[in-house]
Image (cartoon, rainbow, N blue to C red; front, side, top):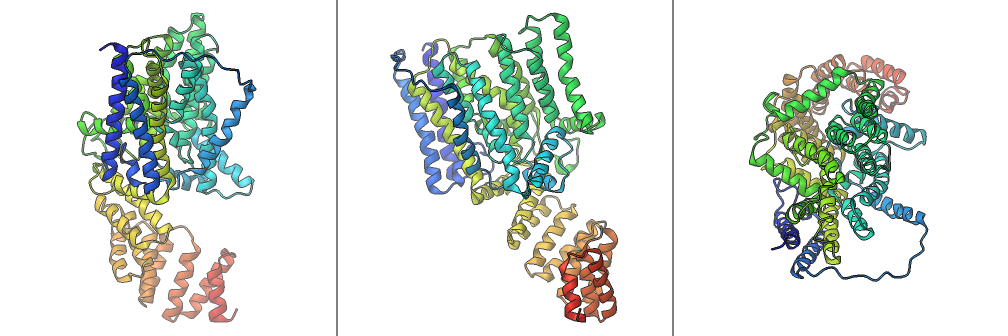
Length: 608
């Protein structure tokens, strides 16, 4: 078998195995095949559409292989369309609509819910300072425009990042593909990567950092042919690192640009080598992120690479050098870059042209892949897919470049259509699951539920998110269930006991809630919410003196809150201490004039 046929065979066989894996995993979706099981959570029409796209792509690639080694048909040039150069920019309009229309409805993956809460409170994450500053500026703009800071408006930032990413991807496609036809195919494959999910309303640090990384790769490729000054990738690398410290893995590719990809004077190249770390450090210091915090971030990464150094709840059932972790990494590849992975395999079989662009992308891809392989994170691997995706981003670009430039295997129409259909089916599955509230909820429950191989912390954290989500939907029965699962995973954390007790209280199950809340107080006597919720239960049971005691303890341990003082007044009133209740309610009205409950109680019980 010649190299061209071997390349097409690898592509066809890999696509068939991928589609079979998706169908099998989707028939009974579980937590382990999280890169394949997505269609299994979709309603029937959407599931059928995704499977048909995937199967159609595999059939076209099989047809391309079975056609033999005939060269691609020569296409006679037709009349020019005479479209103005700016017309391509109009495609950003439908792209923007797609990003908005299919924005994620649940924010369980990554730390989306945590980021949303912190943005609303004005305290974004301290670990990605430049990304936090961008999200903070976005929230400030929303408030200045009189708009609420909620999931739908916060999502506009990642959608804007997706709009910016599209022309960057086209720029990369023009650099890695030699001919106009293959250029359009390269762009289509890149724009159907699984990591495009980051731009569908994803609330995290990763959408803006991927824009900086794409800009770095594009400008770096342009530098190799003398179309850009190397100071541009130096600046973009510094910005990428300031967005997310893990972007430092791109440093090797930047050094390749300076040492082997440039004929600039040595003194200039030496000066440019200092620009990325100096710029990143300057930005971080300006954002009040001192060096000791950088060290803290790297210590977290060190613990992820060498598990076993943290608390027992963070210990994963397997290490970096294990088949289980290799399976997680394979799932990430199949979720984030299935088509580039197939193209990379076909390039290995068909022969690789090691030009300067390929070497530059390899210098970016290999460290990122090794870092992704080394990290064993404490949460469910499917939940931290976003970090893995930015580490694999250069590998995706490398796979597209190598797979579309095999010397003896030029791209034919059937192969190009098959690749695009395969990528579209994979991305559509991911996007539709996250755009459907019930599908996204069901998938996340599967990822952190029974049968998943994750840390105790990951299971507890995931179920706590679900309990909070249930409580927001006033589904207190499921909130109690998920809080109980969090307790079973990490029983020493009093927060989970409080969540379960609060859910039982809201369900009217006061006798069940009280022992749970007493346990939360025993495990976390410094927390005020357990005392408060227990006081509420005791009021419902008519035990007003005991309730007053717990309300006083909540007030003593927590920050001043009108609910605490008002409910203490309720307990005192029904205990028979009417004057004390009146004094408390008057104080609440004075301190919190907009709080209605105490004002209403004064009017009801004291006539004004």
